[in-house]
Every structure is written in structure tokens, then in C-alpha cells.
Length: 561
Image (cartoon, rainbow, N blue to C red):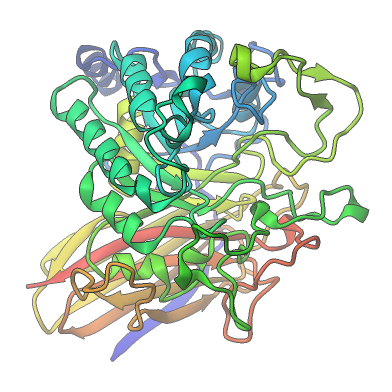
């Protein structure tokens, strides 16, 4: 049995602003000095905004960053781990343009993730690195990570990134040369390794596991303090099989920590008669191919190759693949990104450079005419909110590694405080945490949501309609590594927000707990729901991203002792 209630408070909360903590150097001594200064009360600068392509800071008139829920010095930091530039064969922007746009749209951190491959490894890396350094100096209140969109051997793509350090570029260069699927599948006479016949075939799977173990070895050896990998758009083409996801996680659990719960390209489904591409939201408009996992076959009732409320099917389906992984009791986190290549209604087109021979598409050309593109600028629509001890390269990555992450679309909420308490842990834990309860004990869940106080970049103030509390039993390692479902997972309680303003607070108590379980949250504006309250499949050519907003919070694990 359980007890729950909900009520609202109509007041707002002042955001903490600590943008001075940005730095270019994350060596331990530098981190220690910043923490010392923070203890003396040296934080006080207000975050700024800048016009795209400019480097001069101005004060925010409307701070779009949600408040931090964790307490104890942690704070919310909004970011995007999947961004492309002219150093991708299908990108077009300067690094500085993307960073400036991210800053304008309220982001604190970004990862530059140009596509891996022969040209990128041999030519682009040496060009993008200096551009990243220049962007760090021009936009000192944005953390700019150097990363890579890895062609996972045997599968799809992934974000891979490290903090700044003496060995960062050497590690990226060696990793890409030895383990990128594009390099491994390119014949030697064309500059590749030619070790596997195709990048997405099953022959590549052992290389992916070796790659992650290589990164873990770099951390263990002290060459870098941390390295993270998130699988990108995991069900878009059906290439990331369940056993591969589990294999990546288990091979290097401190490196392979999650996936895009919501892909980028969120403008791609806008209808043509409204100035859009008329495609699939997220470019999720594929069908099974020869390397797709057979278990992802579309049926009359669901289609893994489509998004649901803008989120990947693996994440959106309650009791689906994400839940089947969480039911093992092991961390696996979700995020939301822009995957920005070419941005909706922008006036730029690619330059005239030959990426294959120079590693760059050249400087973008401003035509002055709006183009029909499928992406949004970083921070314009999607945000990955991370709870971090400080605004430093290491602490943001540690927050992501620990699962202190919420994926939000369209500024649906301005803050979320989840607290899970047991009679053995009075203070409780929050998103990404783990606690314990004696058999037969109680677990109290307290949810406080700060509702949106201002318009999003779509020009409207979003209204949260409901919050779902989802829970399922922890059943241990899956006997079938290709398991797709967690039958015991369900929506335990739906909290209706109604016409509340400011903050809403909900509680729920799990009583007589007799087995370990996990719980997670999601919320919606309620505009497009099935009869039982789940997200609706997005329609190709008719998907308005601003009229179907969701947030997903990562889980809390509760162990019975």
C-alpha cells in the first residue's frame, strides 16, 4: 500500500549565479585554489549573454537556467554534449559560432563533437583543437570540451569527451586512429586501417569493447582524470543492440555511462508548409536495415525507429529497453542534445572547402536568406542539466558520471528537487543516487518542481501538466543480454499540476518494501498523450516540437537490506 498527496506553493526561487568558476585549466592545484576562493565568498559575477559570433559579454535580462536541487554546494549547469562544426563532413559552423550561440541560450558547458573518420583523424583534429582553445578564451563563462562523435564499431555513434589536459589531444588522436569505425572500415590505400568490412557490422563489436577499455586504461594510468561516452540517437537506425549497450556499460562502467534519451535534430519534423523539412523529428524516419537488431521490428502498436514526444523509443517506453537495463540495478543515464549541424531558419550555408582533402568545409557563408534546416542552436530547445559541485571541467563530468542529470525540452521546467528518504537515511538522496531500506520499511519520495517563469525560445511560457513517478523492481543481471523489456516497471502515480504557478510539491510513500527497486520521473505539457498518459509517436512531416514538451530525470536506486 502507499500514501500520496500533492499541493502547490505559488512562489519563486532566486537562481544562484556562479559563472566566475569557469576556467581553462583543470589541474588539481587549480581546482583546489578555486574551491578555496569559493569558500571565502569570492563568487559573485552574473552570467552573461552574447550575440552569435561575438565575444563581448552582456548581462542576462532573462536568466533561463533552472535552480539547483541538490544543495550542499551543488548547482545546476545546463549544457549540450553533441555539437558539430565545419570540421565535420556534414557540419558548417565555426567553433566560436556554436559556443556563442550556446552562451546566448543559457548554456554553461558544451562539447564539440565532430564526426570521426580518416579525414578528421589526420586533418581536422589539428585544426579544431586551436579553435576550441580560442573559444575558451573568448567565452570564459562557458566550459568548452574537446570531444569526438565516435563511429562505434558495429553500431551507431557516440559522444566521447575528456577534460582539458596535457594528454587530451594525444588520447583522442590515438583512440580515433585505432578504434573509430570509419577508420577501421576504410581500406588502407585510402588512409584507413581496413580491418573490418563495414563500420556497422557485427565484426566491429570486439573493437568497441577494446576501445572503451583503452579509455578506462587512460584514466587508471593518470593520463586523464576522467573520460565519458554517451551513445547518440541509439534507436534511430536500430544498430545499437541491447547486448551492445550492456557490453559497453559493463566493459568500462566509469566511461560508458549512458545515451541520448532525446536525440537532436528536433526541428526536422516541422511541416513543409510551416517552413520546415517535413521529415522525422530527430531524423528518426528510417526502417530496419541489414545491420539493425531484429528485435527492433516495427509493429502495428509501436515503432522503435520513431521518436515519442521527441524522445528515443528506448527511453520513452515505460518498461522498455532503458528500464530493462535499470532493472539490473546498474547505472545507465539519459541526456538531451541539439546534435547541431545546420540550424533551423539560419542564413548560413557551408563553405567551399573539401573536407575529405583538407579536414574542413571552410568558413560558412551568410546568404542573408533563411535556410530549411532540421536542427536547433545549442540550448535553444534541448538542455542536459547537470548537478555539479562547481563550474569546472572535472565537476561537470563527475556530475554526469554520477547521473545527476535531467533532460529537458523547451524549458518545460525551471527546477526540480527530488528527495528519496528512508527511515535509515533521514537526509535522503536525489537523482542518480542510491540508498537502502530495511525489509518491510518505508521509502518517502518528495518532488518539488519549479514551474517555468518565462517564455522559452519558442516564444511561449510552457505549462507543465503532469509528473509521472515510474518505478520497477531490481531483478539483477539479465539472463538474456538482448532483453528489451522490464515487465515489472510501471507508472506508480501521476501527479496533476493543474493551474499552479511558482512551485508544486508532491509526495508519495512506498510502504512494506520487500525487494530492491528503482524510481524515476518524467513530466509533460500534456498536449499529446495516449489514453493512458504515455507519449504519442511523432508523425513524419507533422511534428511541432514546441507543442509536445517533456522532461526525464535519471533514476534513484533503493536497495533492500
